[in-house]
Length: 209
Image (cartoon, rainbow, N blue to C red; front, side):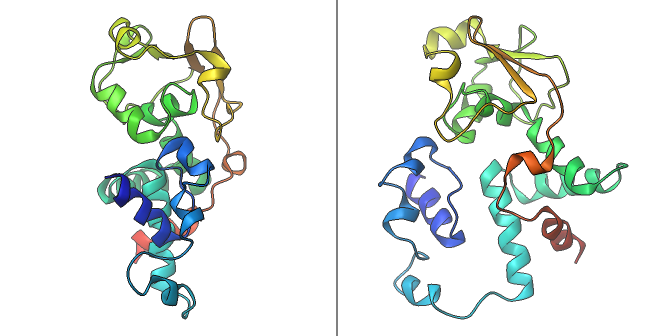
């Protein structure tokens, strides 16, 4: 799996932080080999640009791997965001950013989205004091997220700022109580605050073809 994740980043030409803080150092695959994988990867990097379809596919794949979603999940979020009032990009990103696995990662309780899903699946994450084992759970305003008693015993880790991954700063819509080791969703994320490298509109176009 680690090598597969590295190849994904190299193929897309983006640091997606699929392996947490490893992506910050010299061991990052995109730093060591800044060209697509395969025997002709360096030649493909100098070749012609992607087609229109290829560009739409690339944007979708960047977003999908960044959040660790499969195609069916992305399509469901696209459909739901398209039918809500307001801007599609804001609706789409808010739905995804409110996923429990994303918030666990944002709060620094896990070094990557993949490890956040593992924590949740093993019953180590609680919402308002009750264990939740569904990574896609949509966290609501005011709900508190932290480790269960079982999770604290199995995963002793520093709390607060020391637990925050170096590549992630605490977003303004999340509040962290370092003493209690739990966070709260205090607002809604705005697209321009996320700093993503992918184009949400192109993702919608991909599924509209």
